[in-house]
Image 1: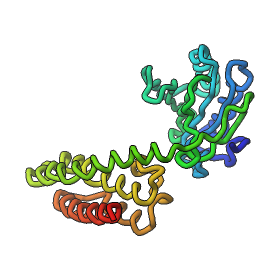
Image 2 (image 1 turned 90 degrees about the vertical axis):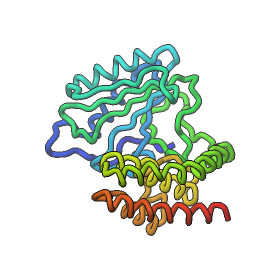
Image 3 (image 1 turned 90 degrees about the horizontal axis):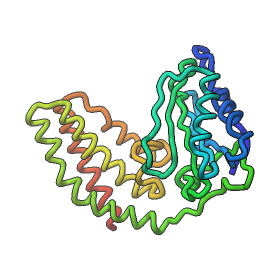
Amino acid sequence: MTRGSQTQNTASPAYRVSRDQIIQALTRATEPLDYVLAGYLGGSDATGRTDEYSDVDYQVIVEDDRVEDVFEVVLRELAALSPASHQYRLPEPTWHGCSQVFLSLADADPAHFIDFVAMKRSHTDRFLEEERHGVAIVLFDKEGLVTVDPFDRETHLEKMRTRLSVLRETFPLFQTLVTRAVRRGFPAEAAAAYRSHTLHPLIELLRMKYCPDRYDFGPRYLDRDLPPEWRDAIDALALPTDLEEIETFRTKAEAHFAEVLRTLDA
């Protein structure tokens, strides 16, 4: 794991509180607590892609019975830094088994919203597979808990193969949802169907070919996960302007899908 704090100050002159100050406040609140065992940054910090638009993905590992305590301390520390403008905590149990809150600060750039996750010591899936999530920036680690998780590629690829078998059937099956909305003259329905049933499956298929470790990451990181010509092709298909163009783009995407599928089957 990489140790240190955020490497660049991404403060905006229009806001009083910088991204670095948010990270420092979170560390100041959590590191002294004996029941907080480690704190680290994921997201763009872990993948080396932090810029002025990056949010703060801050994770802590805590003793199993102290999750609510760390949330109380963190929210109090952030309130001293700035009032919250918006806050949403995921209902428990969460899909990933950890406790998570999202919040933005009134005095910080909205892009620098906080994604704070508290993981119990007993929770073993800490999203630390380098192949999928990058290398965490370790802010403190009292017991050496923040280590690169081994990536079970064979299990992952088996899931991908199962998903491919689904796409093989659902992509052609659901193209009619796009074409019928176009023919009925329903722009909103056609645009939504095109994105869900044409563009996103094409992206997923391209990921299976060129970046299978992150085949399920959707349109994120396409600039590094796809060859430039395919990234350009997806960008060109992303924003149809009217019903006619939706159908034109759908036809092109359908041809691309068939082309990529043939290479995966070869």
